[in-house]
Length: 176
Ligand SMILES: CC(C)(COP(=O)(O)OP(=O)(O)OC[C@H]1O[C@@H](n2cnc3c(N)ncnc32)[C@H](O)[C@@H]1OP(=O)(O)O)[C@@H](O)C(=O)NCCC(=O)NCCS
Picture 1 (tube, rainbow, N blue to C red):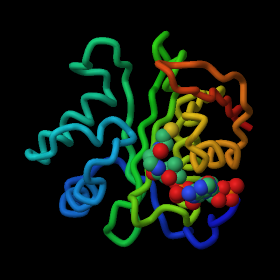
Picture 2 (cartoon, rainbow, N blue to C red; picture 1 turned 180 degrees about the vertical axis):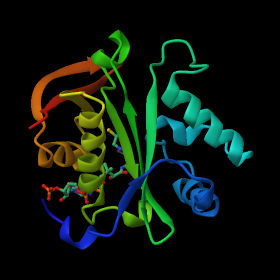
Picture 3 (cartoon, rainbow, N blue to C red; picture 1 turned 135 degrees about the horizontal axis):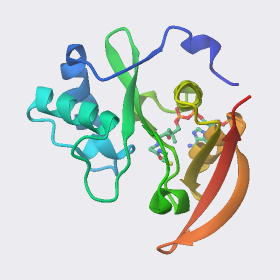
Picture 4 (tube, rainbow, N blue to C red; picture 1 turned 90 degrees about the vertical axis):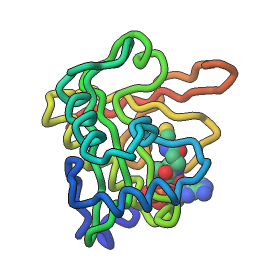
């Protein structure tokens, strides 16, 4: 996979108070862009409140209606958050239809260097640790970097659907 060797130092971690300033910079860098994965939309004014909410989400505590437990990970290097992923621990009808197990994004200034593919690889490893052996990953058809990143991780296109006027590609990655 392109770029993995250069990113040998990056690590996937659970959200931590040590990264508060980097997280705030990340949010600022995203500006008005649509945020992936969805926990980047959570209010972070109270950072420890944000960490508690992410922990609750992982443990299935106080989930909003229609949501399943989901673990958020940060891709970090040298004290800086470079990407964020979210692993849904099981599917419900809504995300089986469109959404899948994994959502992720890379910090705008760090895109196009292979990090998206690395973040997906590391998040798939977490899925396997959770015993998810058939990992559903979806993306908008027009999002070429995302589709390529999924294919680079062994994603097999299963179907394309129309979801609210957008074509969603549904891929499956099978654990080795
Ligand atoms: C999608 C995203 C995570 C990809 O991360 P990235 O670090 O830029 O991606 P990578 O550098 O690992 O590249 C992945 C593949 O896309 C290709 N790619 C990267 N930028 C591209 C571009 N602008 N146009 C076309 N292909 C592109 C790469 O060549 C690579 O393909 P290859 O493995 O066949 O060589 C990143 O663009 C992002 O955060 N986008 C906004 C959020 C988002 O769309 N998330 C996905 C929601 S499903």
